[in-house]
Length: 93
Image (cartoon, rainbow, N blue to C red):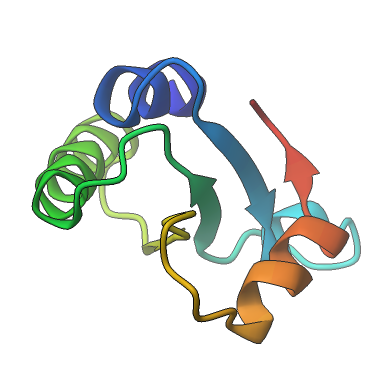
């Protein structure tokens, strides 16, 4: 569901990682943390895509806390969360 939704909303060349408590077998459950490197780069389109993607996930997963971090490649700022997500996460796409 996450893979198909990400491709559908952010473009087929989008890359996605699941990170945080959901990839730690010692922890039970927790929120769903997703790091996305989208194909689309237009800021307005990205906001709209993120909202549509979250809505789709909420409909499929129900009452879950879902965090989506989007790293627009055209953006020069590099936040530490980008590196942490890629290094500790599991790549889904």
